[in-house]
Structure formats: C-alpha cells, structure tokens
Length: 280
Image (cartoon, rainbow, N blue to C red):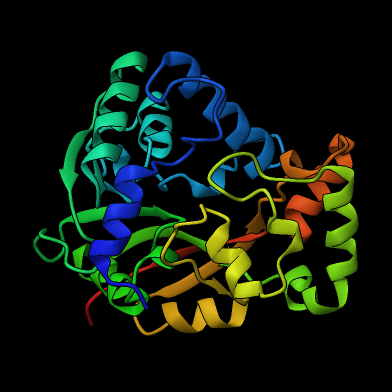
C-alpha cells in the first residue's frame, strides 16, 4: 500500500479533471465543463439534494467542512446555494489553488485549508456538517480518516460521504470481460490520464485504481455492507444511495431515462448520509 506522500504527489500533479478536459485547468470554461459532466454523468442529469447539508434548527448558520475539496465543485455548489461558513480542505496545494480560482470566477467564498484527512488539525467538535465525496477511498488508512471526520463533527452533526461502489458489474467482471473487450473494440474509453485500456483490464481492484489515472497509487471500492460497517462505529447511518454510471466512456449515447436508471441502480459510487450520536 502506498503512503500518504505518494497520494499527495499524485494529486498535486494530476488534479481532478485535468487531462480529460478540453480546456486549461483553472479557466472558466474548465469549471463550466466540469460542472456539466458532474451533473450529467455523475448524477444522471440532476443534482441530488440529499447531498446538501441539512437545514439547521431555527435557520442557524452551519459550519461546513468540505474535506478533499478537489477542484472545488462541492464548495462552490454549497456557496452558490446560499450556504456560508464553508471550509474547503484538501491534501494538495494544487487543489486549493484551483478551488480558489473557481470561487473567484463564481464570486463566492470559502476558507481554504491544506489538510490530511487522516490527521485533521481541527479541534474536536468543530463542524456541524462534513462533506467528503470520493476521498477516503484514496487514503491509505480509510478507517482513520472516517474516525477523524467523526472527531471534528459536533454531537448531532451530520456528514455525507461517498466511495467507489463494488456494484454487481464489478463483482461479475470476471464473467463480463467479453463485454469490456467488445466495448473497447467499439471505441469505449476514458479520455486522458493513461486510462485508454481500462475496459481491457482483468483485475477489478486495478480497474478501480486506474480510474483516476495510470499513476494513481490508491483506489478502493466497497460493497454497501462494507461501507456501512466502516461507518457504524462512529455514526448513525441514516440512508445510503447510488449514483454515477460513466456514460461518457461509452461509444454510443445512452437515452436519458436509461442513463438515469443505471445511475440509480448500478451506480459506481455509494453515498451515505450519517449523523454523529449526541452525547448521552
């Protein structure tokens, strides 16, 4: 298993969406394109409001940690929807630079912090909500990162986390490799980052790691049962749900209704909305 410095080095050199975008990283068009792809491909066409921090009692302002902010999608979405008190944190300086530019382009605000999810510098009970999408499956000690999220949450605080989902397609991949071979022959591929032959790979764990780039040191995926078991020592798990069927990788256009069905039922990301128990 690679260490955290290998993870940091990879993401410093390979920020999210770089190598796949038709635009320069940090341009307004880059951010527009990224948002369009997230909504169209990662959510089947419509932003899921279940991923938003829940309203605070009496309309109080929530303190929000966007952990592993990447290129700033979530921090920007929260800010554009009127939320304040956002701290955007990431392991890499490059991600924070890109997030800062995204916020500037959109004329919204968040505080920026460089943080290691396994060793957060925040005091206990610092936040009302933690948003952590597609992050803890890239860190060497995922259990420790989950425990840190719980530590910095206030009692009764909430979090929304997501990880790669070992869905039925991945579980059955040894029997479905012929379909991957056929799709590759028809032109299926993920652009950039050294992933052109992802449909030809044999090993599921290698496919998951390769998804974010050929040099990506860590990528893990979980069944629903594994994900819930990882969360339950720290949280009450209120709901789980699926998203993300990467239609952009296919050599043909999926009908919108079919894409949405695949997104909801065969998603490659599993989300969990959780709550930290109140002190007895």
